Length: 476
Ligand code: KG4
Ligand code: ZN
Image 1 (spheres, helix red, strand yellow):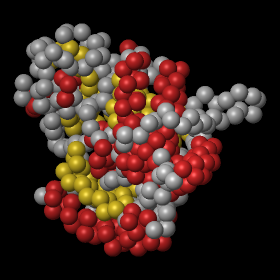
Image 2 (cartoon, rainbow, N blue to C red):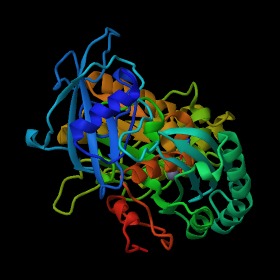
Image 3 (cartoon, rainbow, N blue to C red):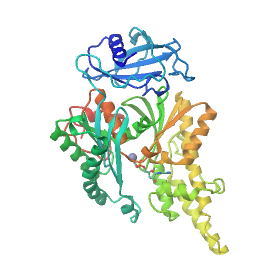
Image 4 (cartoon, protein in one colour):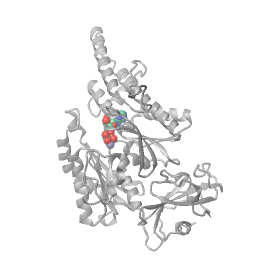
């Protein structure tokens, strides 16, 4: 069936005259986000934030949530359509609109069609990211980066052992214009082809955020385009969509970066609930501090991973920091890494003394591997426990620390044992980048949202309130 015919049927089923942007493939290649079943997402643009989710069962059984024809056999698909507000999921069958049967084949491309009188293509967004020490720009369409570039300032901050805010802001000012030129040229698009311009507006270093935000707002004004202020953590959550399609939601995200270690329940775009956090250092911060202790340089994560190669991970027992509750006992999922860092300081001093006495070298690989192992174990154990308690069957790993091989391997092994599905952001999009900011902005545009051109920046803002960035009334 031709894409246009599919869109006609989708439109009839939803009973809307609004233009629909439907994307994805049937079968395994289908794009899914936080919705039930194998899924096509359709944003009914301009319908006051109304969205339509369309799910395809296969083998003639609409309730089959497996999505797609895993063994490649051709099968007729049934279309299930319902209406709900963006981010919410239909709770009961009454929310469903009448079903229609469609003869879609697995792997069939239904990307970028139009329905209705005003055709809408998938939004194309130029996104900027300058919240910390990476200047980044990307052009994103349909959850795919058409072009993405990152200019890291790490070397410059390395000699200070951490990010110096003033240096970061200046380097963003220097790097951003070139990066924008580069991604626009690489994408082969002009500003007239864009549907919006996005920048990270929170959380982060205020001076650094301002560079991206002011640049994006100026370009938006200049070209008459909507501006989208994006929450950096929502960007990290969305980085997983740059990889393999997700199984049906809801899901539990382990977000581990230089500034955050959190468990977030995701029920749909914008529907986020934080279930755990670190009470002191973030996981990435722990990597950075321990790397400095071991004189491995900055950023610590990749340096520790390299040093740990071939090391004996069970040589040094290290504490799995827990968070006490006022009434006794421990918080079931919250993290604490400062005790681990102190234990490493003591352990390294002791090992140095022994090495000096024996005239040998510090057992660097074993120290790095033991540290990496205990961090990975703590993260995976608490994530799996939380998923079990919440009845969630899909785990998602994002953020800079998600690039860690030991952590990815351990999560994979544990999920296999427990029968859970898991996905991680692609390696290239774990650390800060603008493609993930573009995906978040694209979702918001599809839901009919945009930010005020007067939206400022903020060092902190709760992820649960990310939707406020698209309110008429500015939260900051
Ligand atoms: O997400 P990100 O780029 O920036 C923040 O939003 O914080 O994360 C940076 C953090 C740094 O602390 C860095 O040491 C850590 O991610 N990191 C890693 C690895 N690559 C980056 N940690 C462990 N293993 C890695 N391979
Ligand atoms: Zn980040």
